Image (cartoon, rainbow, N blue to C red; front, side, top):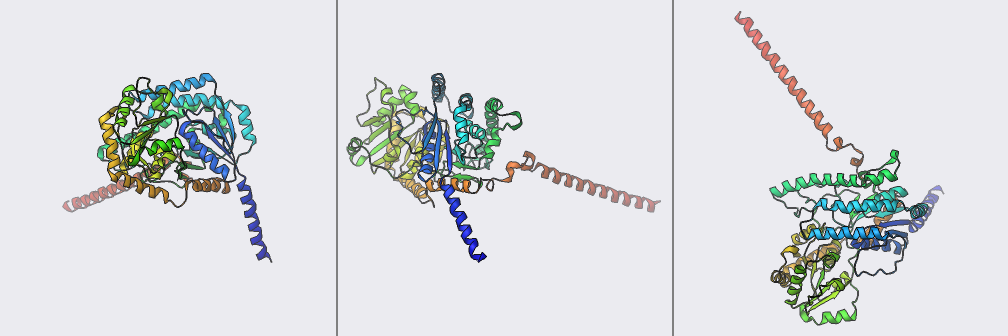
Length: 524
């Protein structure tokens, strides 16, 4: 009797547990905007559509020209910044964009942006009405974007366990303890592949060491916010909060990324925005149909080009497009197109495009892109070759990976000339090896054991069900630095060897002295 009752009790407990899990309360936070917001929107919708109660806390300003937000199935809490802060953000971001056209992007160029994030973080942390409301909701888990460290401070203040979902590549690998051997793991902004020569490995090693200095500087930038909003006896550091995440998820797939070591609490879930295409508007279909067998090229260079453009850059691209047989669809803010420049006859300018649907069209021939990870993932998913024009942040590194997979090429924006640009377009379209390589990477991505939305749902529910990700985090998070570097072991071994050498020397000297004494006695 007892033996038959135990399984029924176990089944009942499982049913109750699953019932509770279906109603899990999840908070997502997005204070970055742009592609980061779009990814967090997808995450929120997937979780909401699968039975969870999701609320997104985000800033009302998304910094996406031409994007029109539609209704969402989840609840939202919005913090709208004052006009003066929005203006300061726009001025700083545009200044940062202008600097890109003068010199190459560098890790320290993000410090002014992080300083502004820290300033805004004080405003977010002072929104006691919203924070008190969120705290009273008793969320089971939160999902945050690590690009803005303020997200970690918000969830720590609310006392909610959290998952970090990074929208970019492994540029936060040092912050969360992910092994990054500089011998074959290229550092952020290095522009290297995993097959580095001696000089590149030397440079990569120095960049590896320099990355720690960048992390230290980011800690300093947010130290004032932490001191202001956390009591002295429980003030966290950013490093503590990175390590405290129950799980780290990267928006990365190894159809793009180079192989590298991962820890159990690091997962790669990419392609949430890459889906089977939907039908286009009739107007756009008619425009594409005019291309015949030549097909069309999609150009998406992000808001930076239309917000901060150089006339010579736009002119050279426009001239190159006029000389190719394909139709061109360019996402560009129409109202900001240079007044004295007539668009090429085969060019259609659109404020906003659904990139995924266009990349899935049978007449697509090429994607000309700045190298954002979401766009490249969609290109891989649909097997479309890429011509990269990287501008800033992780874009140069992303395009290097696309070139290494032989599914595209890249050209620096300051080297773009009409003839060179047009020739490279035709090379990528006519040389079928690029298309074949793109299709190969597409097969790799599409043949993963589980679709990305199921991966996301499965891992989030696993963390909730198991009461956290402590079983996934390595013990190294609790070790002092000298133990992680085995300095105590090295010192012990060195001491033992030194002691052994000392004893051997003493014994030899004693034996020599003994032999010398006996020899001297015999002589006497």
